[in-house]
Image (tube, rainbow, N blue to C red):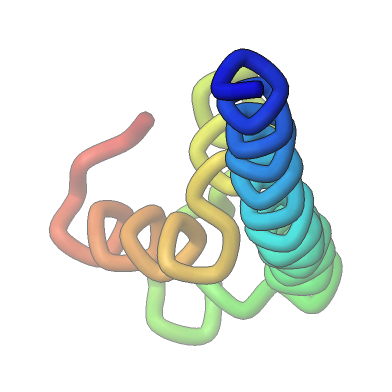
Length: 87
């Protein structure tokens, strides 16, 4: 009887963990998409040239930072570019 109870508790724990992972994964995916869209808009509208700096570009590192970091990643890229550090 205790084996059955242990199996049920184990399955419930696995389902709860899977629920939270899937819930957080969707938030991260939305943030990544918004970051890449923001990077595209910044480069399309030449926003960085308004302050006299070169564009962010579409290098591998820039896309990875914007994709993984999302909107905060794009903000970090803008700050680095403003301080003269190219990625």
